[in-house]
Image (cartoon, rainbow, N blue to C red; front, side, top):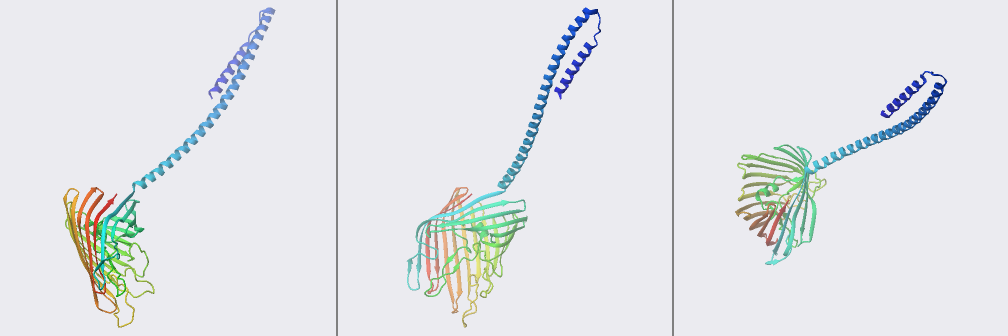
Length: 458
C-alpha cells in the first residue's frame, strides 16, 4: 500500500511539471522562441527521463506487491502451521494429562513369602513305626521355596469406583512346582465407609481378617486355612482328604464396611461360587460367608463369623448334596510391641457335601465334623526384634459307609524370632512341628521343619 502511494505522488509531481512548462508564455521574439525551443527540448528530455524513472518505479512497485503477496501467503501458511502446532500441543497435553491421571491413580505393589528350610517328614502305617517318607504335602530335605508372590495392581477411576487385580505365583524347589493364577480380580464401588461392594474374586470375610490380627502369615496359614493333608481313607488305599476349612478368596459379590477408632464395628457378607478363587465354576446354588467384628478399643477385636453352602458341588444331574457349615470366633489384641489372640472354628460336612448313594443298609449320609482352636502371641523385646509362638489343635471325625466313627487329631505349633531388616522386609528363624494321629487303619505322620522364613513387600 505504501509503494502505491509513493508512485501516485511521483506521477502527480510529473504532471505538475508538465503543466507548468505547457503554460510558459511565448514572448521575446525569435531569439526567445529559439531559446524556448531549446528549453522545451531540454524539458522534454527531463520528462522522458522522469517517465523512465516512473516506469522503473512502477516495476519495483509490482515486484514489491508480488513480494507482499508472497509474504502474505507465507504468513497465512505460518499461521496455519502455528494453529496446527497449537492443536497438536493441546492434544498432546490432553494425552499427557490422561497418562498422568492414569499413573497417579494406579498403584502397583507386591508381596513375597519365601523360605530356606530343612524338613523331616515321617509316616506310620497301620502296623509299623514312623519311617522317613515323602508325601502328603511334605518332602524331606533342604530347599528354597517361594510359597507366595502376589503382584497387585490397584486403579482408582474416581472417588467411588476402583479395580484390583492380584496374581499369585509360587515355586517349591522340593516339588519342582511352579504355579501362576489370579488370586483377586474385582471392581469396587465405595459408596460409604459402611457400604462397599466388590464384584469378582475378592478376599473372603474370615481368613484374611484373621491373618491381619495374627501377623505371621508368612510363617504359616491361619487355623482354618492351614491344610491337614491326608488322614481319610480305607485299608489299602492312601488316605486323602481333610485339607483346609475355608477359602481366602472366591468369586462372587462381597459387601463390607467399617468404622474407625474406639467402639468401632466392621462387617463383611460374601455370596460366592464356593470352590475358591482357583475354580470359578458354576453350580445350582451359591454359598454365603459372613463376619461381624467389634473393637472396644483400636488395639482389640472380638469377631464372629460363619459359612453355609454346597461348596460348588450342587450341579445339574449331580449327586444329592447336604450343606457344609462352619462357625468362627476370634479374640485378639495387638499394639506396637505386643500381640496375643485366640481363634476357634467348628465345621460340619466340609468334606462330605455329597450324600452317599450306595446300597442300603449303609447310612444315607457320609458326614464329618471338625473343631479346632489356635493360640498365638508375639512380643517385641527390642527395636526390630520379636519373639513369636503359636499352638493349634484340630479334632476331626467322620462316619464312613460302614457306620462307625473315625477320629483324627492334628497338633501343630511353631516358635521363633523375627527381625525387621527393613521397613518392608521381615526375616525369621523358626521351628515348626505338625503331628497327625488317627485310627489304626489310617496313617499317622509327624513333620519337623526348621530354617529361615521371610516376607518382602513393596
